[in-house]
Amino acid sequence: MSRKLWAAVTGALVLAGGALVTVPLTAGAVDDRPTAVVSLGDSAMSGEGAGSYEDGTEGENGNWCHRSTVAMVHRTRLADRTVNLACSGADSANVSLADTVHYTEGSQARRLIDIARQYRVTTVVVQVGANDDPRFADTMVDCVVAWANPFGPACRTELEREWPGRLAAMAPKVETALRDVRAAMSTAGYANGQYDLVLTSYASPVTERMDRILHGPQGCPLRLADAGYGRTVAVPQLSEALRGAASRAGVKFLDFSRATENREGCSKGATTSGEWQRRLTVDPYALINGGLDAIGLHLAQQSFHPNAAAHEQLGNCITEFVTSGAGSARCLEGADGRLHAVQ
Image 1: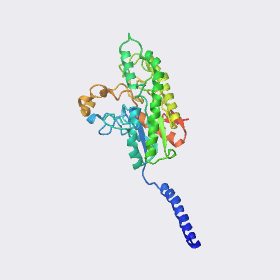
Image 2 (image 1 turned 90 degrees about the vertical axis):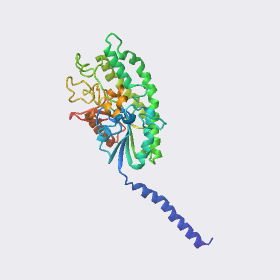
Image 3 (image 1 turned 135 degrees about the vertical axis):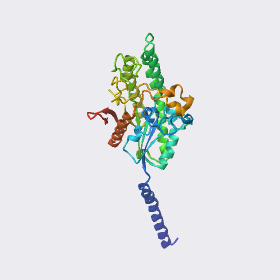
Image 4 (image 1 turned 45 degrees about the vertical axis):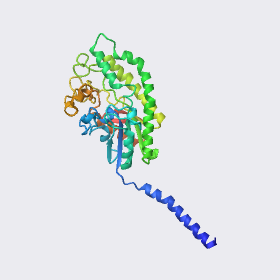
């Protein structure tokens, strides 16, 4: 090869190499897709209890996901779009990449892939675990049954023995779901540092600080001591178990355990004004969309969930937390009566 030809080839390779290096960087820096925040998880995230449910999720054709148009993800101020993939009653397997179907819907993580390709996802918020081994909804039913039978044992009697084991069994399932969410985002072309992945815990739906005589008829048929155990022991322990799962999975953690403190169901006595949690709620309108399928659990599935006012506050707390850049925080009510992310 002549010296002139070698020089020409070398020059061409240098130019080509420069193009190979600079073009992807330029293309990567220009992403004009709308930004989005996506939520995954169960009823507490879907907006169960907040009302205003999306068409097709109120029992139609067996879909009881109850995704609210005012759910907390829609109250965040973090992106151009908000997308809610959460579904009432979902467990960790339903969030993961596993081949599962819940209320007619498949894997939430798999659907996340499509959303993450359509939008530039900046934040993914996950709330899951309560429907795994803790069996939170079943536990609430057990406590209502215990209240109805004053001669039987308190529901906390058995729960105190079982709760630590239930939490230990739950944790690895939540970790798997979180890693699958990471895998889904990777499949969509994201590096871990290109978005925030946040796991939240749960707020206590009830409190022992209720009218000692009338709290049952007011909509909270629970023994005061059982409600106190739930608020001060069971819910905080659940939160710590989820914190551990978040740490091991390498994701951020936002503690909701005290988010509705002093605003739980029946905490305001005869009035629901100022409360951020639903009391026992029977919804006969569920029969309109769900038909006979609504008879039973679905008539009361909105019970003991954050209401619309709570979702507004939780959305504000998520916004503060993500914009702060912190790795963990707690949602606590401030002097202004609003929830804030406190480190």
